[in-house]
Image 1 (cartoon, chains in turn blue, orange):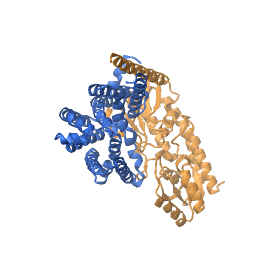
Image 2 (image 1 turned 135 degrees about the horizontal axis):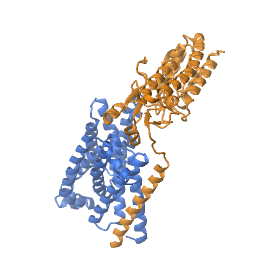
Image 3 (image 1 turned 45 degrees about the vertical axis):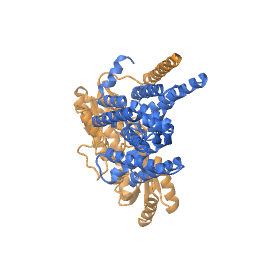
Image 4 (image 1 turned 180 degrees about the horizontal axis):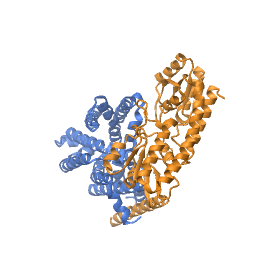
Length: 272
Length: 296
């Protein structure tokens, strides 16, 4: 396997699309992941991923041709609602679990009507061939949006994650920032769920950031390593999955896990 | 501080290298493509038919899209590996009738790929494309496949025709056996647990009284079980045609509940790539049906 088979990779339109998607989306995963890990929202993003099932089911029920749209709309509503209710109760994890199971059950019930669930089973593990040119345009849009959001709001978000009340006292619109963050999260998760798969999308958000957290000493390092890890596992995972003929999402996640455990061992030994 | 960056660089290189080695080991074990014509079939019965015609031909390499254990193509998803196969193919043999629901994707990605619909000019049952299950129709499919191969590889026409005649002979023998049984069981009704058996039933002149399509990954609701049982009672306990792999649980339960006879029939969707598997599978089906109806 030399250079020749490396270029063979780019002969195919679907691989070019997939490669572009990985280049755009994995840095976003790394970026958002840092805040998700910091704010201990891993469970939140997991629930968000699961809501995709209901989003698609609603699209099917209402006969919408592009289920992407219902999926995104539902996920945004889901995230905002979850934030809203979560702010009022003490046991946030219970609420998330309730929401998550509710939406999964609803989605499964609708999609399995008539015994046709297998048609949607690709959603669970992801299908790399589902990435189209149009979707890449969506991804570019969300990429720009996230970067702008990050540049302007990161400090606020960070402040809120350290001490909410104190942040409020400094006149930071904590609620709005948090809601915006949830919306961005919803958008990114929904736009990549079809090729990553519901079962593992959360791992992609969490693992690079968690691995980076193992060895970082400040915010800059935290972001830098998270980005590198995310991009690296994305690209390597895509290549391996192509040559070894396995699903792409899981391959990426396996690599990210290896990175996590290696950094964990490293940090443990050096007491970083 | 420096140590950390060094570690990360080292880690990434090691992981990338390990991934590379793993992939090379894994991929290296698979065979390389040979010279000559490269023919891809969509799934198992099509592969077997093509294998009987061109399996031994020197300048034709056959490949199948799905794994031999994939089964029906209803919800099949193309993998990157499949796209690679198709991009090299000179001819793509499909069963047709809409069972390959990814076909539009293929046609869009490879507009120049020659696609051979084996069910061309074959009369289909309504919304059911398990054509190969009817021997009569499968013979026609074999002829279509041979024609396609001959057009592709004109030089070997004589050989393909010869292979086809030999294979059709074998199929005709089975057909005669079926005819014999048909005379005795014609008009009886069955309950089918797989759409594929409708073609089989037609060959035997049996009427399908009720269908419950127990396919891969199919979830059955409680109401459907009750429907099956009431259908059994309404139709004076007909024979159940079921697939061993997906239908046996249901069949055994219904058997207990309503005391019906069950035929476990091969849908010839899975197996090794033995060229005789269609003949053997059908032979076995004939034996099972004979037994169920007590035909000598």
